Length: 385
Image 1 (tube, rainbow, N blue to C red):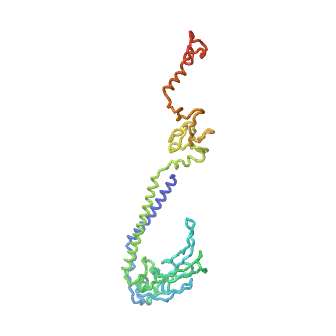
Image 2: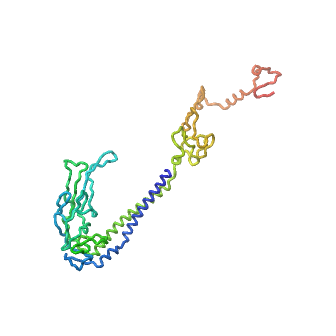
Image 3: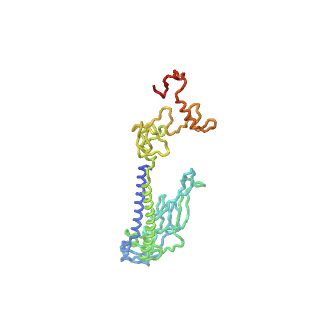
């Protein structure tokens, strides 16, 4: 693993750890929050259960309890569909083709769901909240008060495709409506403005709650929900931070391999074990493993020695194979290989020594040295006069 990859790994691990710690910190702040601001809004809270507008409550925080009423069915301005519900969600699905890694293609409907942040009664081709004009008694409710009411019962599907079969790019609309078992009895928290109830801009918890509840009950439920969500994010954040820390530990302990050390200082593309046209051997930091080495360049793991010059690569002689290619032993002509014994006999050390001495004894023949064996000095390669 090269140094730049090692540094990148540590950097990525640090970023992941910081993200995890950030998530954990945010989750902790949510869990430790005591929601004093919401409680302060309920100090002068007025409960209204008969639906009658009282001018004395103008500008005050109201807990309006009663049954939701409105004109049904509601009308979708985009498709013209009539929906028998006070509140509905319009989801959009598109028929898409997804390419798999094995080259196959999957065809399926991809849904874009509506949610509490979607626009209300949008005329555009997008997820939307569809809502009638709703009131409780004499109070007309701001539609933003009911954003948190979630329809969960499927109603109808409108397909815009023109063919018998689904085609890529086809669009269809899925509608969900309020459940038939919903009694439509709600408690809505808001500010009285004339005969309207509007959202308080500083209220953090949802404004509408199913059933008749007190402010304390609504706030307690909201806190429990937020604590549960905070705990989940805390666990996820700690796991992410732990994963980043482990990655930092793992990458920081990795050591450079000989191949990584050789990169940049030992280019490839030459002959044999020592490439041509590049730099010299990497030096003492590189110790070849499982590769033959040339004694003229020093032992593995040492500085360049011998006939090699710093800054030049080794060039094998013409006709000689590269150092990395072993050469089989070739015995001399007319001589059997060393591991073959003539006539199936083991060589005799004593006989070989006798032959050696006989070859170096002075000859007694006058023809051998050009003189007589009597009265003349004997000369030979091992005797001086």
